[in-house]
Length: 277
Image (cartoon, rainbow, N blue to C red; front, side, top):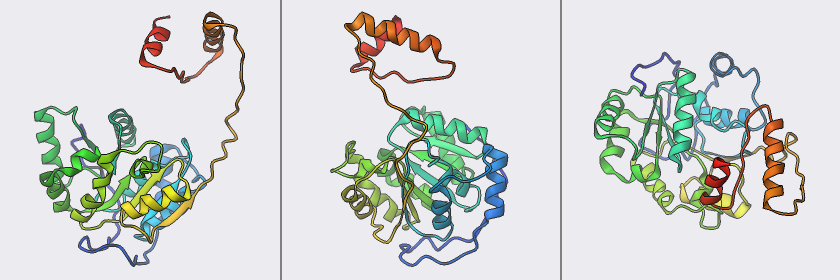
């Protein structure tokens, strides 16, 4: 776990005691953002949707960003964490995803912590102390953790610069991955003093987008649509006569692949059998 606070530029934030119904105009530190993006992430230019999202965040506005997988959604809150002067809270539904994002943030030398059920009692005490000292710039949490009043109070003590809801489609009962614990996020945000919210998802119909913003009490949010076209993806079908032939074909693909890949199976059992093979 991170135990040191990295230097970061700060910009004034709106008072945390009122909803951000009318965002204040403020200078956007583009030069600093480009410098940090290059030095910490090796990024020389912002992709479609990233610039618009960052602009809205630094203007103190609520944002719903619909960006496809791999479009760089995480950068839209990792960079602000270096500038806002208050912790950026990121709500994530998957512990494995939180772990991966924490490791990437640590590699970029961002002071980051995660709070989930995998922490031991000693680790929880350490993280609680770090939060009390205002050290983490970025804090990953599960939605269930934000149901705890004591934890919310510790976050509010130092203020929250940005309230990020990753996989925001989990808020919608019309969505494909509804998660009941997400429905409590509106109350968590209220308890934190209505910090600006950034809702992120790879896909959302108009109805799902409306429900996401309604659940987060952010009807005035800027909606950023980065598009769904993925020119780096292609689709094809390879017919096989039986399971053995399918596995042989997969073996050929694996041998030919020089990088990394993902193989989807219908069940955990099938995944285990495939792994053993």
